[in-house]
Length: 259
Image (cartoon, rainbow, N blue to C red; front, side, top):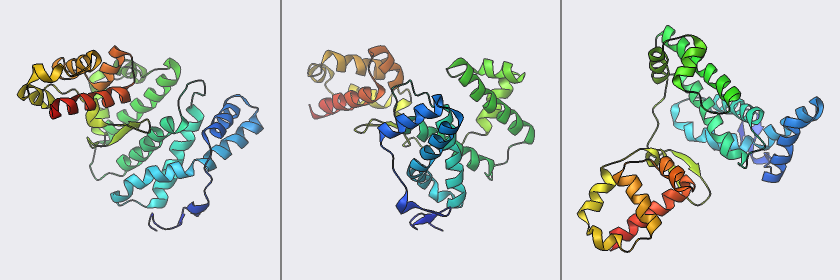
């Protein structure tokens, strides 16, 4: 069975329903606050209404040699986790939260079936650490530190770090991590870089080029390429979104290149 076929896991993908954002919000509210029967019904509708989302995610893993049916089912598990853990009080689209959850579940599955062998003890520590991390995320409402995870499973910090690193699948620098519909933020955009673009800036006529930039553009470039902050760190300091930082940064560099 291939992805370009109409049916996957016995589901006719051409007939999959697509929910509007308003419908998703309404159903998510029922899942969180409705009675047991209505919540169960809303959850079922949310799952059925987001199967296209699952399909679009698992298609990115089509070159891994895994069964499309298996990946689709694993992706559905990630979807259900996203529905159960989504905070409907936040001003965030469900897909923005759900896609990383689905990807994470698929990666976990691929990691478990990887040909790279990790010792049983290290794998067990990693599983316990990941479970502890999910538990602490729910109780603390934030990402826990390594120390907190280590204390939760009563293991040395070093063991936890080694175990988690051992089971992490390599990620492409060009893999998208966020998109607001106009600009896409890639993994490489989140990496602190003190040399690559700064080398370009040094080769140009800095004084003349920088005079063409706004004060905010100058500040962003200074934070990114002279101080070495990531886009996420820069966004926090400036007080705008990471997608806006990415857009302004690219525009400013283009101004300098064309000067």
